[in-house]
Image (cartoon, rainbow over all chains, first blue to last red; front, top):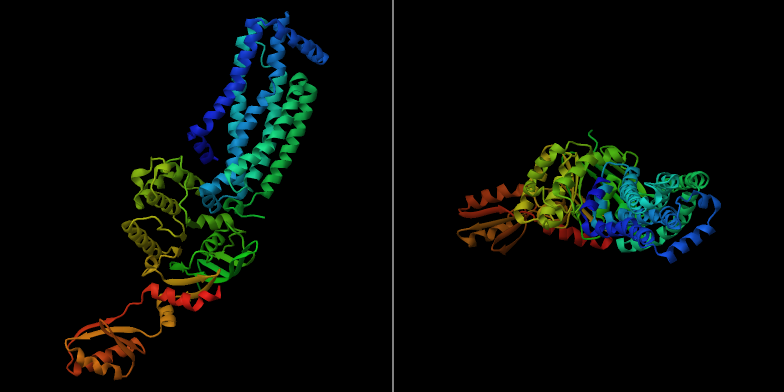
Length: 263
Length: 306
């Protein structure tokens, strides 16, 4: 795990684009969107946001802060509409790392070293998973903190001060998103052990992570809107699936995979 | 009786339709150097991987100091040091970080890193990123990594690939010293000159199995026949009588008179007879068997059996 993270930390060509993606989703898009609403006061945009709010469930409408249409539009944008971005970035980061996990060792030839090392195959598997999870979680929590800062600074004045994060966001970040990451990674690491090249593994990881991202994207809005009801249920379900996926992945992982054999 | 350091008994390993190793039976005695010779694809690397449990057998048994590499994998691997055929490292990490990672995996003090690196002449580059290492430097680091935890059993798969002649000599000297200190070594190579003189036991691997196994001298006797001695004299004409001497099988001129004897035991009598006959000898030299001769002869005999 430490070798993976050390390599990753030194790979500017690798984490550079990911930082750009994170900055785009957590800083640029919310800053531009909220500035448009609160500073430019685009009446057309605000009207559309308020129209959208009218279509949302009553609980969301009741929870939307703000005395003016502009403030309400800013709140809806910051709290509800941008929630899924918290899902996209960590899953993208972790799947990129996870795709390298096994096939990368094989391509470098370091899989041979690991295969001869006095550690159990489960330790290697867990190390690979954690090495992929840490950047994902770091992106999640780091991005979450930055996002909170951005929306509070940009939209806070219109909403009477700091209003973010809400209970729903805490639920999403701390309870729901981690198991989604774990599920995606369990599958991606499994895929990585079966691919012949990193390029193929990345392609496969994209295909695997896409439905997970879409699923997580779909539930994120619901969790943010109704954290108590949806958040607990979806999070618990996701944790159960994650546990099963991790156990299945660990069971299927084999020392010979590090050498490019298996099945 | 001391159990062998490594034991393979009727081992079989297939990869799909391909049989990589079959009916492999071999032992590596404690404190000895066994050189596994064979062409590419003979099964040498698979044999090393089976020894540590990195690969499982399909049949047969492998033991390392009596331990099963699959059931007791961690204990076996803790006792083994492996130099793989490709000295792969984490290129973005420094040499020190690579060795540090190995030290952590083997549960040993990182304080050993400097000594192990110095032993293989790579100490000066420990803080450089491995991606900038030459092939020789990578091989040295791989050797330092394999020796870091002071293993009982060394599995060296082409350990001198990419090294310059001085480094090759140093590594071979070190291997010999380690064997003298009780370490057991299985070294795979197809570079015959490397194995020359250091092997306590030679194993010829062809088609996934060991076709010939034994001390180089024993194998030379078996495959190369009778000993040869080169004899020369001031008056070469006086050597004409050698062919008729008891114990001499054959003679031919090859710079000097090459004499094929029944056994080396016939040589003292032959020399005494020549000297008694007034022949002034200028050269009496048992012809050393070259490993290459032995290898190619063994290959000739067994190569078609794969």
